[in-house]
Length: 211
Image 1 (cartoon, rainbow, N blue to C red):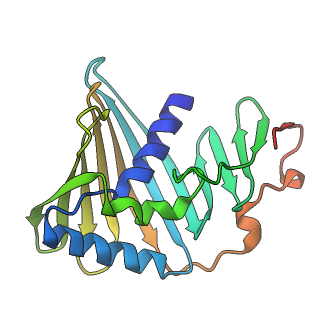
Image 2 (cartoon, rainbow, N blue to C red):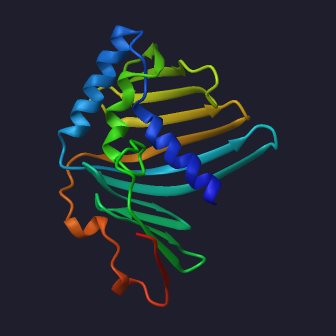
């Protein structure tokens, strides 16, 4: 589960990464990012499909994410993470355990600065607009670093709403993570408590405070 969570978080972080090699693709990602960052929050419900081509396995699970600037709540069947901008609560459901940590301010990963999801796309990847369909754009992103574990990220972005429809994250080790978005909402105004773990709502937990 921890490996899958890492893959999901990495995929989310990579959703908007690119290098400016295709001007039209860059314009689309600029608009996609600008719309998300100007909204009160970004909330998504999605299926995560984990495919291991080497072992011939395919697993699917449901998840949800709500993010507002550098705060978020990510929920998966066995794991919930809250981040309020200063502390992270990682709840492992089966273990009934919550670990509290503080972020590294120098770390721009999704776990520490969720808004980087929409701002890191200006460096590190080459991008290509693969298809310009009636209802969507399909954009491929390729790492400039040849030593990267990534082969490709393929994004499908809706034309009319500039919403994320699908993100396929393909690795050299034969593992692919596909995030298929069922709902994408930019209108929710979240209560600040959304991003903070409340122990009153969860009884009988072991809390490990590593701050």
